[in-house]
Length: 313
Image (cartoon, rainbow, N blue to C red; front, side, top):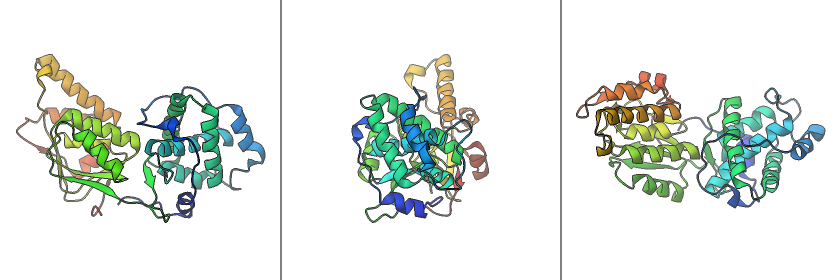
């Protein structure tokens, strides 16, 4: 499903273990700004003889030394390891950066260990640095920052959690998050008539933070669209149905002004997810007892969907 990563770099990464203390990055990462730059010591070590890169590799982004850029690639890798408490993971953007910039796998692993030592007990600062680093590495490589998992034999783990027909009710987000973690899933196939907007956005933000993908191969309507929007990459099949309409406004938003605020929240959520927020405006124009189906071309154009695939395996 989607693009593959079965390259020599992937197979090498799959065989390397990262011996670090996971406590520094436990829990969900919250997108934030880099609070402080890395010290020069690790950077100088990497630049010495350029021993961390393969000759002829692409130069780092403008204004970045090789050591600084290696630190950012390693921090992104470390983020995925720490989030999942699992050494058999990395990030798609890390793999792309290793290939593009010629960073050796052992250099990425070594720098990851150095980061843990350098930041010591300042876990929140490392978390901010790692989160911002994933964004930078993704931008530089043009590769979406998504979770990559490996099986014990080094092959890619392709397990997706599937949820068909379930209403998004109270507790849905936490239950689904638990199932995603227990199954070591790399994505969520969601077909749902909708339900709680709060639960859908809670789950959507988790999916994006963790670099998990989403897919729809039947029908996803109403609040389900917010779950789909949370995927770091978002797939649909050609026959999938995507539908939007006005959400039922909770009692606390029962006033006219409250209703407008509710629409604004939908607008801001989609913008946060990098999707054209005009989708929220279109939804607000459709009565709650009707459904406006979004064409695949419109879904792609607005960024609600990143790719159309033949089937969900």
